[in-house]
Image (cartoon, rainbow, N blue to C red; front, side, top):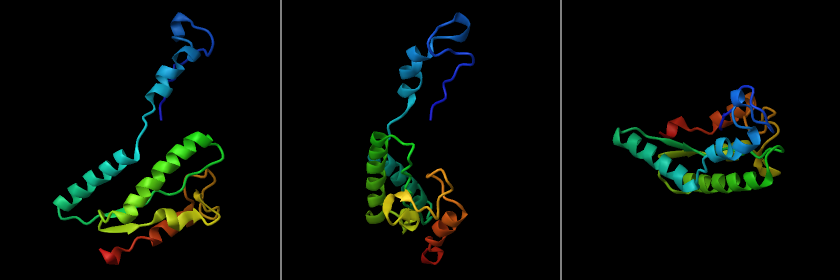
Length: 146
Protein backbone atom coordinates (compact mmCIF):
# COMPACT_ATOMS: atom_id res chain seq x y z
CA UNK A 1 0.00 0.00 0.00
CA UNK A 2 1.31 3.44 -0.89
CA UNK A 3 0.23 6.75 0.58
CA UNK A 4 1.82 9.63 -1.26
CA UNK A 5 -0.89 12.19 -0.74
CA UNK A 6 -0.04 15.87 -0.58
CA UNK A 7 -2.34 18.09 1.46
CA UNK A 8 -4.12 20.49 -0.88
CA UNK A 9 -2.78 18.76 -4.01
CA UNK A 10 -4.97 19.24 -7.06
CA UNK A 11 -5.84 16.53 -9.56
CA UNK A 12 -5.72 18.58 -12.77
CA UNK A 13 -3.92 21.81 -11.91
CA UNK A 14 -0.53 22.60 -10.49
CA UNK A 15 0.08 25.30 -7.91
CA UNK A 16 3.53 25.96 -6.47
CA UNK A 17 2.34 25.68 -2.87
CA UNK A 18 0.55 22.34 -3.44
CA UNK A 19 3.04 20.46 -5.63
CA UNK A 20 2.77 18.76 -8.97
CA UNK A 21 -0.78 17.97 -10.19
CA UNK A 22 -2.08 14.52 -9.32
CA UNK A 23 -2.45 13.21 -12.88
CA UNK A 24 1.21 14.03 -13.56
CA UNK A 25 2.58 12.26 -10.48
CA UNK A 26 0.18 9.33 -10.13
CA UNK A 27 2.29 6.82 -12.09
CA UNK A 28 5.49 7.71 -10.24
CA UNK A 29 4.15 8.35 -6.73
CA UNK A 30 1.42 5.71 -6.52
CA UNK A 31 1.65 2.98 -9.13
CA UNK A 32 5.43 3.06 -9.26
CA UNK A 33 5.62 2.42 -5.51
CA UNK A 34 3.57 -0.76 -5.46
CA UNK A 35 5.90 -3.75 -5.22
CA UNK A 36 5.15 -6.85 -7.28
CA UNK A 37 5.85 -9.82 -5.06
CA UNK A 38 6.21 -13.24 -6.66
CA UNK A 39 5.36 -16.67 -5.30
CA UNK A 40 9.07 -17.48 -5.40
CA UNK A 41 9.87 -14.49 -3.21
CA UNK A 42 7.22 -15.48 -0.67
CA UNK A 43 8.45 -19.07 -0.62
CA UNK A 44 12.04 -17.87 -0.16
CA UNK A 45 10.84 -15.75 2.77
CA UNK A 46 9.15 -18.77 4.34
CA UNK A 47 12.31 -20.82 3.82
CA UNK A 48 14.32 -18.15 5.66
CA UNK A 49 11.92 -18.28 8.62
CA UNK A 50 11.91 -22.08 8.65
CA UNK A 51 15.72 -22.25 8.61
CA UNK A 52 15.98 -19.71 11.43
CA UNK A 53 13.43 -21.60 13.54
CA UNK A 54 15.07 -24.96 12.93
CA UNK A 55 18.53 -23.52 13.70
CA UNK A 56 17.19 -22.68 17.17
CA UNK A 57 15.48 -26.04 17.61
CA UNK A 58 12.02 -24.53 17.19
CA UNK A 59 9.35 -26.43 15.29
CA UNK A 60 7.28 -24.35 12.89
CA UNK A 61 3.74 -24.67 11.55
CA UNK A 62 3.03 -23.44 8.03
CA UNK A 63 -0.38 -21.89 7.45
CA UNK A 64 -1.96 -21.50 4.03
CA UNK A 65 -3.09 -18.10 2.78
CA UNK A 66 -6.86 -17.73 3.07
CA UNK A 67 -9.06 -16.79 0.09
CA UNK A 68 -9.56 -13.08 -0.58
CA UNK A 69 -11.61 -12.67 -3.77
CA UNK A 70 -13.78 -9.58 -3.43
CA UNK A 71 -16.21 -7.83 -5.77
CA UNK A 72 -14.19 -4.60 -5.55
CA UNK A 73 -10.98 -6.18 -6.92
CA UNK A 74 -10.08 -5.83 -10.58
CA UNK A 75 -10.29 -9.18 -12.38
CA UNK A 76 -6.70 -8.92 -13.64
CA UNK A 77 -5.33 -7.96 -10.22
CA UNK A 78 -7.23 -10.77 -8.57
CA UNK A 79 -6.10 -13.38 -11.12
CA UNK A 80 -2.45 -12.41 -10.60
CA UNK A 81 -2.76 -12.51 -6.80
CA UNK A 82 -4.77 -15.73 -6.85
CA UNK A 83 -2.15 -17.49 -8.99
CA UNK A 84 0.47 -16.53 -6.40
CA UNK A 85 -1.73 -17.65 -3.51
CA UNK A 86 -2.38 -21.01 -5.18
CA UNK A 87 1.32 -21.59 -5.90
CA UNK A 88 2.39 -20.65 -2.37
CA UNK A 89 -0.38 -22.72 -0.77
CA UNK A 90 0.56 -25.73 -2.91
CA UNK A 91 4.18 -25.35 -1.73
CA UNK A 92 3.10 -25.00 1.92
CA UNK A 93 0.94 -28.12 1.67
CA UNK A 94 3.40 -30.34 -0.22
CA UNK A 95 6.98 -29.17 0.40
CA UNK A 96 7.35 -30.81 3.82
CA UNK A 97 9.47 -27.79 4.73
CA UNK A 98 7.32 -27.06 7.79
CA UNK A 99 7.02 -29.38 10.76
CA UNK A 100 3.23 -29.25 10.39
CA UNK A 101 0.70 -27.49 8.20
CA UNK A 102 -2.53 -25.76 9.18
CA UNK A 103 -4.76 -25.41 6.13
CA UNK A 104 -6.46 -22.13 6.95
CA UNK A 105 -7.54 -21.69 3.31
CA UNK A 106 -9.43 -24.96 3.20
CA UNK A 107 -11.02 -24.29 6.57
CA UNK A 108 -12.64 -20.99 5.63
CA UNK A 109 -13.10 -21.24 1.85
CA UNK A 110 -16.55 -21.06 0.31
CA UNK A 111 -17.35 -24.59 -0.97
CA UNK A 112 -19.09 -23.01 -3.98
CA UNK A 113 -16.04 -20.87 -4.85
CA UNK A 114 -12.80 -21.70 -3.00
CA UNK A 115 -11.29 -18.37 -4.09
CA UNK A 116 -13.69 -16.60 -1.71
CA UNK A 117 -14.19 -16.73 2.04
CA UNK A 118 -17.23 -18.71 3.08
CA UNK A 119 -19.99 -16.14 3.77
CA UNK A 120 -20.39 -17.71 7.23
CA UNK A 121 -16.79 -16.79 8.01
CA UNK A 122 -16.09 -13.37 6.54
CA UNK A 123 -16.48 -10.08 8.34
CA UNK A 124 -18.11 -8.30 5.41
CA UNK A 125 -15.03 -7.01 3.61
CA UNK A 126 -14.35 -10.36 1.85
CA UNK A 127 -10.82 -10.31 3.25
CA UNK A 128 -10.89 -10.68 7.02
CA UNK A 129 -12.61 -13.54 8.85
CA UNK A 130 -15.26 -12.84 11.45
CA UNK A 131 -15.13 -14.38 14.94
CA UNK A 132 -16.54 -17.69 13.66
CA UNK A 133 -13.92 -17.71 10.91
CA UNK A 134 -11.10 -17.14 13.37
CA UNK A 135 -12.45 -19.95 15.56
CA UNK A 136 -12.51 -22.21 12.49
CA UNK A 137 -8.91 -21.21 11.67
CA UNK A 138 -7.77 -21.87 15.25
CA UNK A 139 -9.35 -25.32 15.13
CA UNK A 140 -7.07 -26.31 12.22
CA UNK A 141 -3.93 -26.04 14.35
CA UNK A 142 -2.95 -29.35 15.90
CA UNK A 143 -0.77 -28.34 18.85
CA UNK A 144 -0.51 -31.96 19.99
CA UNK A 145 1.22 -32.81 16.73
CA UNK A 146 4.18 -30.67 17.69
